Length: 588
Image (cartoon, rainbow, N blue to C red; front, top):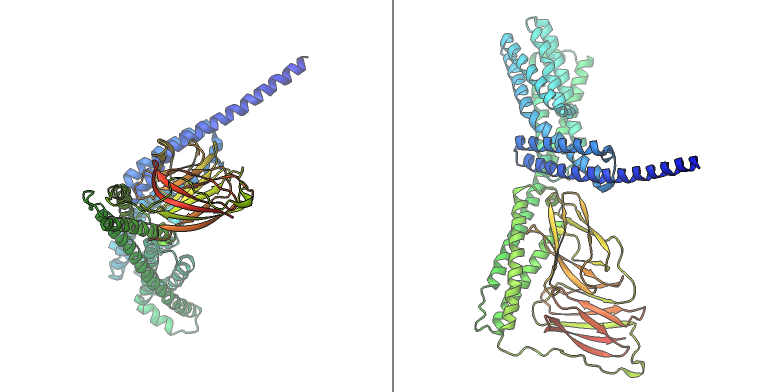
């Protein structure tokens, strides 16, 4: 009995321990995520060249990370809740800040080295030694401040070249030794010339269209040219080496120079191609930005048509301007989603200008949509007739039997939606664990499908923080779904009625809204309108012979479909019970 009691107590303790571990893990991650916000602040500050603010933010992040790991150390080695990607992201930020702090000091050191070289060539060894000592002191300070500088090949190469200067200074007074040192310099500089160029050619990516890659290649070209110039400056050593063409040193020098010259031609060609590609990529973004600004002007012009004394021509013009602006926005957004240069250069001035233009246009479109609808309501002439009640024809012998396929034709009177969702209530459900992805160009789908009571995830592939909300004026529904940080995902739940669609938005104005539909079907059809058209036809399969279906139109009332095989029915598409379009259905 006593042994059983011990075993039972041990089991209870084990269960409690497991529960406590789970609690401490969540507590630790939550505390860490508070620190992660400082990490993203540090990244933003560094992008804005505010290194002190970046360092201060990073220190706060490190403090909270240490405190969080003290609660549960496993957060530093887990992939749960995106911890691995968070830690790697912040490690890169820390390295970038470290390099940003150390680089100005190293630049001073290399400048002192250049002074020492020039002073030595001017036969002033004493002053050259003073400059060299200043280089050595600043170099040590830079590398102790920023050890990561030593990981860069071009920097190590420059430091090694300067380190050799001490020996040259010491032996300057002995002519023969000076000649030997000059020959050594020729060999070292010619090897560095070829090696630096070839390393750059192998490691740089000519397809990476960004200013950083361009500057990296330019710096390598300049450094390689300096190495070659250093070889050519040793005229006495070169003349001595040319007297002995079969000497191994002379052969090596010639091979290095030949390889370096050939490599530099390729690197310059790569640089020229990259500059041309960057110019074209920038021009393309400028054109997109111009198109957005023109669309914004067009959108604003549609708001200038007064409600008083509106006629059909004025309404048609305003509607055309509104729909043209939407089409431009959607085309530009789709192009930006595929534009690698835009996606990789979100911090540039052009990208920020595009974001601002998108935000202005989205705001204008929301306002203009309401104005165009008001113009439609103010038209004095009678609208074209549309169905207000269902009409049936030719039910035939199969009346009451659900059709296996439905043919539909939609006609809109007011502004045309971008799409319509059609489905049959066949007893199935959408996929579980739906993931809504938002990146620099916005949501990755125009509409997502979920089931009642289900949860779904909102994932950010952007570097910005987004507050995502869902709303529907028809349902009088509004809900803040999640706050999603850079490279994070959050869970949300379906809380609006079935057979209804809500709009989802980010608090960032440049993000185009999307929609989520709560439907009891795994086979919805998305029907897209062509630009400038107010009609569209579709066919909807019904293999399970479901008796009821739905049409969901963004910002319109849900439309229930009840149709028999062989039956023809015309139904009104309404907003707030006001008919604004119609659909003609035929059961097949």
